[in-house]
Length: 308
Image 1: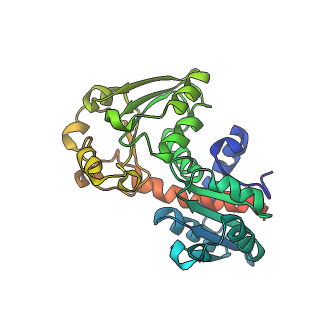
Image 2: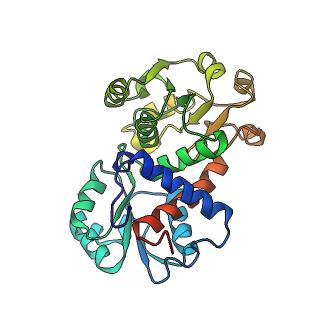
Image 3: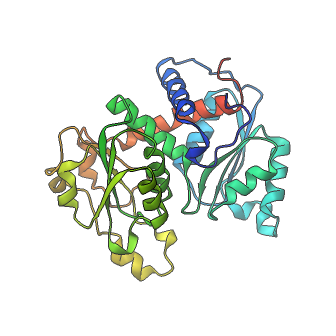
C-alpha cells in the first residue's frame, strides 16, 4: 500500500494508512522476531545535514533490526555538500546506492525537493522549522498505546511553539482526529505560527493560547513539552532570556490530572526537571522506544516487505 512512496509531512498518508502503520508497529513490538530479516540486502541512506541523536540512531536501529544496512553521514562537513554539491545531486548519488533515503536538513522544503529528484523513497527527518513526520508518527503511536485511541482528549503544547517543527507536525496531524482540544503555552515571543492556527480553524479544532502553566495544567490529558531551541535564535541574549520560561517540576505537577501523559520529542535541556522522570506519568523515554518500532513499520512498508 505504501511501497515506493515518500513521507514528507504527516498529511501524505491517510488516517487508514497511518492506522495500518500503528498496527504493524505494535505487532513488531510484541512479536520479537517479526520482520527481523525482511530487509536483508536492503540499504538505507541517512543524510543528516543537521545534528541528530534519537532520530538518526532510531532509524539506523530500525533498519538493522529489520536485517538491512545503513550508510550515510551525520555531519554535512564530511559530505560533498561542503564542496558545493547541490542537494539534488547529493540525493541522486545516494539513491544510486540505497533503497531508501532518510534526510534531515535545516532548510524548510528540502525534503520535498529531495523527493522530486529521488527514484527511491525519501523520508523527512526534519526540515528546519517545518515538518518532522516520523516524530509525529512516534507521538501518535505513544498516545494510542497509552490511551488506547487517538481521540477525545485535551493536549497542551508548551515551550518553543514558533520554531518547533514537532509541534507543528503533531498539531496538524491531530486536527484530523475526533474531539481534540489544544492549549498552546508559550512566551509571547514563541507563540504558535498563524499558519498552524489557520489550519486548526479550518478543521474546527478548539484551541486557546496562554502564558500560564498553572492555568492550563488541570485541564490537560496530554502535555507535550519542548525545549527552547538555541540553534533557531539569531542572538544568544534572546535565547538566554527565554530558555527558562517554562520548567515542568514537581510543584507544577501538583496541578495536573493523575492520568496525565507527559511527552517530549527530546533532547531535553532543562525544561523538564529530572525529578519528574520518576513520576509514572512521564512517558518521554517510552516515546523514544516507540519511535524505533514505528520507524521499523514505516521502512518495511515503504520497501514493500511488511508481509514478508
